[in-house]
Length: 103
Image (cartoon, rainbow, N blue to C red; front, side):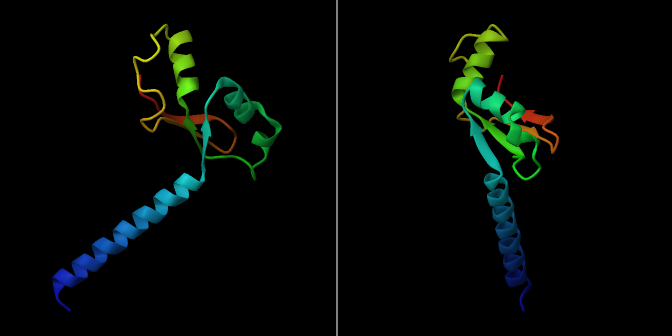
């Protein structure tokens, strides 16, 4: 077979594997839109069960705006409000191990 064809097949396989990985990550996501939902996620009875732990939680605009305006004394609307893919990553014990927030 020509090398170009094999290279195209390899690229297609890599792209498909990346898409599958992204879809698996998306299935593990929940969206947290306010402080009450965050508290329920972090401190709720279900969050201690390994069967119900969610690996990554998306931060919604309302919670981000509240955090920016209260804890950091920032003006609401100065930063992206949840539309830019902000997230926190939580390990099996409920500890935040990584975050990607626009400040």
